[in-house]
Length: 370
Image (tube, rainbow, N blue to C red):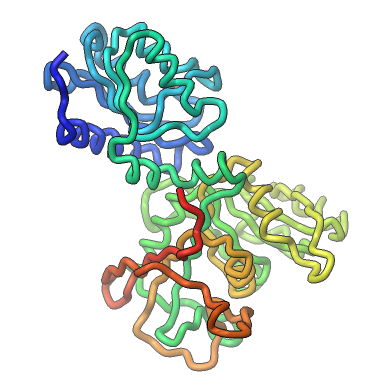
């Protein structure tokens, strides 16, 4: 077997990552995985995990390669699995096909795997290498990592804002602060997340669909925080069985029945004893148990403020429009700091021009490491 250098390994790992990205929106709660098989410096097979419950990336690549897989190197962005789930484990299949070397971008943090796939390969005489483009591989599956290690999804706050920090006028009107292209980008964000979350105030004010319409992609699960279940049963968000309403255990039972009859799922949680609101940590744990790895929080201000105060935001995606709204509703308007030392520190933002708007992507410095 010809020795592969770092440059070569990274080139094929980038291909595996690019393939894995094709599964966005279709494979959760599984991670996104791509695989490239290389033999005699030529690609003999490739594949990616296309849908939850479907063949894993390694199996697709092996099927394409056929007998050419014998003696090949497999590049995969995540450690091959060694346990039975919806499909058979991949590590033994790689061994059986005659793969002689496996290069994995990262170990699988899932306790069911975490090193066991690599161990299975090594015990069978397969050479292994871990950590090629690991940072990129971990970022690709950041939501999966959050869910299996911390029992919570990766949380992104998305908002369109005026230059003076408002997300709506005092009466709640917000259509439209940002431009058409920014709104298309916002729909792209929805397609990249497993669930989109708003408060009942947004439902009552705007009656949004919260679906993906302006770009191609899967619509996420729609989650409404609604302690007393004030969401109208005929609200547009309810209709197709992809709506989850999280309410308080104190909510009237007749409202539970009304929402469920229209196709919504309702989960009641213990409220905070002091505020009566749903604790953010319980909300996140509940969504993690539902298989949500990537959560997009779209508002409104009270919901966003609660997530910020709970230090639960991993990433902000903000569309800044060249307009001033004066005294409006601010992004985090319910947060009152006692001093500058309480401010949320953010890392330097990535800034892109989107027609007349600016698109800022930024992470809090306190976000747990991947």
